[in-house]
Amino acid sequence: MPRLAGKVAAITGAAVGLGRAAAIRMAEEGASVAILDVKDAEAEALAAELAGRGLTAAAWRCDVSREAEVQRVLEEVAGRFGRLDVLVNNAGVAGVSKPTHEVTEAEWDWVQAINVKGVFFCTKHAIPHLRRAGGGSIINLSSIYGLVGAPDVPPYHASKGAVRLMSKTDALLYAPDRIRVNSIHPGFIWTPMVEGHLSGQGDLEAGRKAVDALHPLGHIGEPDDIAWGVVYLASDEARFVTGAELVIDGGYTAR
Image 1 (cartoon, rainbow, N blue to C red):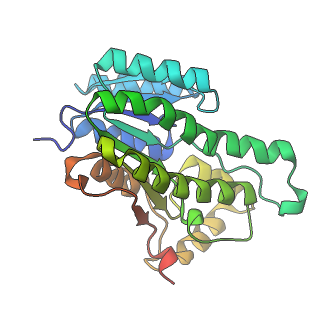
Image 2 (image 1 turned 30 degrees about the vertical axis):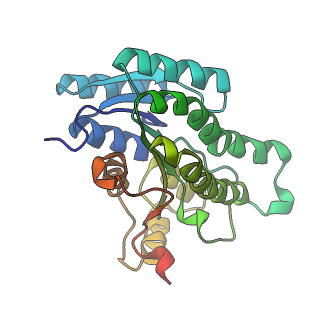
């Protein structure tokens, strides 16, 4: 039997990158997948691709920084599929890479609005649906930079540290409801976000080789490396896992 048979999952930022990989693997494992993103064309194309393979998926436009929109979309997802069992808080942005004293308030707030408030809004409005389903799983995408520091992108690092602690708090708050909450901490994964970050620093090929070398396994990760972690935490295989940090980083933080 597929690992996620009968489950309904909402994934934010699901049109590209890690979210796209998670949506594909979760659908293949039997979940009905709600693809939430502001990238309308990519989200609709992915939903059509999955439906064309006989899998269950639908797309919604959702800006996670807007609470009313999040509430409405999650209600529509639960109405369309009959329930909600899994929330994957994946939507995120990197923001500017410059020293803290040069970051503007607007630059700081933009990252926090998506990476932190987005997780808050989605969790807040998913909880009633998960309670009605008798429990479920919330999976928050943090980062290695929710665990360790680096001398760049201060707003991003702050946001991912927040997501790590939000996950633990909510794991304790909602354990009586049989709602599990965990965070995933990817190393560098070859996604449009990372490609854009490296491109902005100069030669892309040289940048990728440098990032490869940061990981003891010798290479950057692929989206599927994270997607399978999402599948695990969403599945009943992880029924005793909550408040945990799943680190998938090629050994980056083991030093």
